Image (cartoon, rainbow, N blue to C red; front, side, top):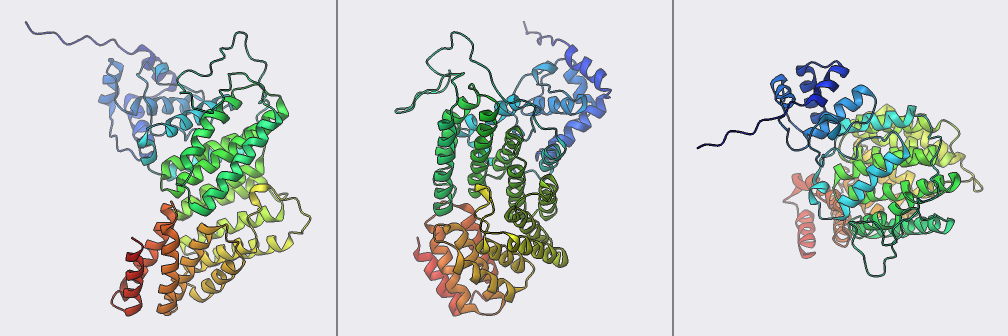
Amino acid sequence: MTERPAQRTPNRQLAALIAEAGFSNAGLARRVDQLGLEHGLDLRYDKTSVTRWLRGQQPRGTTPALIAEVFTRRLGRRLTAQDLGLDACAPVYAGLEFAATPEEAVDIVSGLWRKDSGSHAELRKIAFTPAGLVVPSRDWLIGRPDDKVARGEPPARVPAQGRPGVPRQRGHVERGPGQKVTGGDIAALRSVGELFRSLDDQYGGGHARQALVRYLEHECEPMLRGTYGEQTGRRLFAAAADLTRLAGWTSYDIAAHGLAQRYFVQALRLSQAAGDRAYGSYVLVTMSRQAVYLGHGREAVQLARVAQQGVGTNAPPVVQALLHAVEARGHGVLGEVRACTASLVRAERALEAARPGDEVPHWARFFDEAQLADEFGHCHRDLQQFRAAAQHAERSLQLRAPAYARSRLFCRVVLASARLGLGELDQACALGAEAAGAAAEMRSVRAIEYVRDFERRLEPYKDAAPVRGYRDKVAALG
């Protein structure tokens, strides 16, 4: 006797929401496909697919969360897969949402930390999504400030053993839910940020990235879910934004580009909860740099301009210089000589307007004459203006402190490429070999890719003696 297939129950929740949204079956399928494309997925659903969902069939993979996001955007309220009568999943786009409230922002970013600190290797393979830049940057620009971030006293009978599901670590002090956050806690977050930033600058993002993510999960998340007043809460969100941006930056450096993008989006949202508009502009600048690196010049320019618009003209001159320099990098990638030059001039004038006594945010202090010369060098290289690129790259290397080892490596590759463009093959290969040696000492995919880009430029000269010598030196690095 054969078994009859199980009867499916019609999905009345989904049917009601389709009616409320005013979707046709084909219209819903089309929107799910479009959202899938934003996240690098080729789904190809149609009206028949939606009919099956209404009859009770459960779509697989990330689709339930994509459907929920379609309805969230349409109806203006957050909906989950369960709200639609669908099975939940771990969507690949999770983290690109710009949360409606600080509480929701904490839920989203802490979910990222937990997944990233575990064995979820697929999280580090998610592709970068240019279309995923639009909504967060727009929401940051036009969004209203959060009225309240303070959290009240903890509920009675809070268990002392810490959060379930988080393994105890030797030497780790569990911070129970609702514990009062102090100024010392926030100072510790800031100190940890400086430590990890220094490690990243010298040894690459892969050196201590996982330790940073675990710190965020085990120390920062309990603080965000703790008890704090309004002023302390703003400072806490600011520190969390800074560490989350750094987690994104180190992810970017190891070529986990989709994950980095998600960290940047969440850092942007946390900066809004902090009420720190200027830091939000810095996060957008970071997103713009990633877009430049991946060749998305138009998006890079747009992000830099949103950052400029978001802070207005009241930001310190050093911050203004940074914003204009990053816009120039986007124009350089696009080959837009006039626009690139105009942005560089604005950056140069802004930095010249800075005075020794000016108050400069801690995150902008790196932007000095050495950094500006570096930006000029990159732009002129991209525009194939090799003599100017060499001059600015040499100046940057003269001024840049040794602690910025990775930045010096990048600039040395720019100088090597410029020398090659000028026909100075011996000097180019000598500089390239120095950069390759430095890259071998780092855990930085970007550093390796800079060297590989230089090697691609060497291809037309592959039989020349200096190039053979370069290859021998690189091979000896092992």
